[in-house]
Length: 195
Image (cartoon, rainbow, N blue to C red; front, side, top):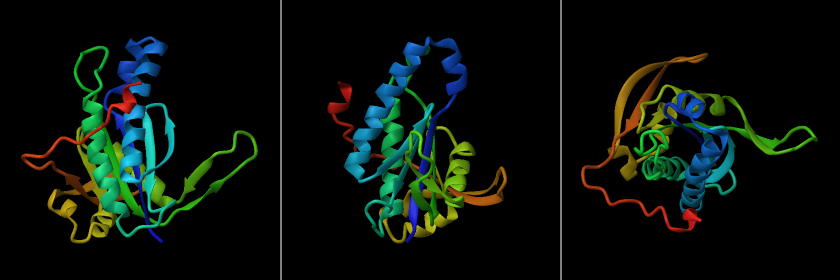
């Protein structure tokens, strides 16, 4: 069965982390990731891992669903709003992130013996990462495969074709950008994450 895989990271993280003390970086990432974790529970998303400022998540793997792409697109949109509620310690402005999603088949499992962790494998993971790295700040970029998985859901109405984007190791890939509705209700990112 197909799954959807998401990558998200902070725009300008490398430059920002060079200006901050390690403790400040950790506090910033904690404030951000607890919000994401709260949203992951809300949207039925499986958190795969975090590496630095990168957050990797998946739908359709632990709990099979035909809605995996819709659920992950909605999660990605909520992540952007949640990130904006966290202040950049250098500017006082909200954190800006890029989100990328791709859908298809993966293999999951644990490899190695030392500090073993559950991982995802396959080209879907690589392509999802490319969707993020070539994405637009403050938007969710999805692949053509993810777009086709959205079916007739309301999420399709939010998509606009971006055209072909050059992706490292992949060549030109057709992508879509998720645009926000004009008057949209704010997502509830909860209060539990503030602790």
